[in-house]
Image 1: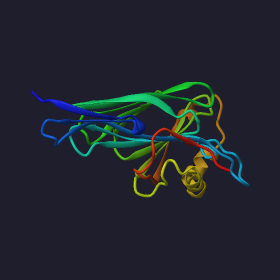
Image 2 (image 1 turned 180 degrees about the vertical axis):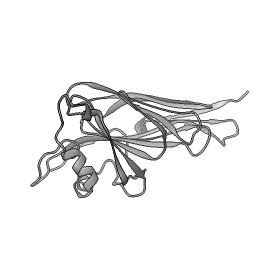
Image 3 (image 1 turned 180 degrees about the horizontal axis):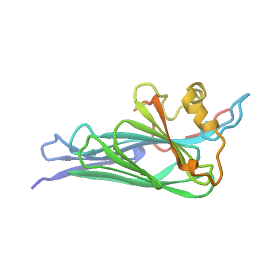
Length: 213
């Protein structure tokens, strides 16, 4: 019989468990930030002037675990919960978009190396180390999938640095500045930046909201 010891740290939205041997972990580590700020001399673009980012790691007892992030243009941010046990770790949540509609977001890993991700009706296989940009301004969510490099993105509680990064990264800025299309099938069309990469730091804080001038 395997005995699990669980540690819950509410400020970091962290749930991890270790088995009796102490060599495996299960659960989810969730770090988030949401913001509304004023960009001097810039158009107040949703996703940059207002938005939310969540980056988390799912572990199911088999290293290395799956890291995935979501960047939305809704200041509400993601709401949900994660569970982990030997063999499976899952996240089930949703975000309320700028149009008032709720978009479901689900992640599950059974091998600890890749995950299945669903964003509304869209489904993705074999995800590891990816960031999803999700525009919620149109009739349907518009999604861009980008590579996540955890070493370079500003800390998630540094709103000034995050907005500066978004403005200076052309693929991100162009995605958010694109005007939403109404009642077009292309609204839900996945956008994948060839060779695109988004940088992120694992030193962010959980659930922090901030605004700047």
